Length: 183
Ligand SMILES: [Zn+2]
Ligand SMILES: [Zn+2]
Image (tube, rainbow, N blue to C red):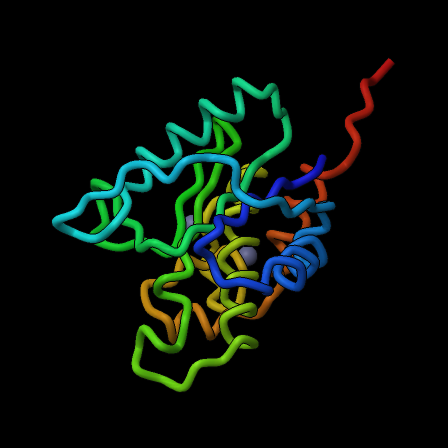
């Protein structure tokens, strides 16, 4: 299984390769990063945000149309929301194998802090690996340092390590094992 990372042209330039490599290292998936071929959809002008569900509908349609069976992670720069949340770091839809994350609230600048590419890459990796975990069937974890912990704030996101806890790692490895049918 290979994780396709679709990096939108408005997403931070030059970070796609280090972020992709680190997401691959953290998840144990191989990953391929390409320029996003999918249109940005669901932008609500009044909110200046993208409806993540609409974007995922469109991404799933693209995936189906192009017969891509591997999971896809889309990285966009626009802020995200959905029906249940006024803002989201990211959203995954396991059934169709598609996820989207936004870099909008991952950059120090958003919080009036000094810009840092290293901090931004770390957060893209933490959030990207989290959504990839969902695409592999993992749920949320109560361990605050685990990739699968669901953060509400930037500090909670930064409190996570770039790794899955032992329990989540076991589940992940089960998913990544080649399936062997019993004879
Ligand atoms: Zn989650
Ligand atoms: Zn965990």
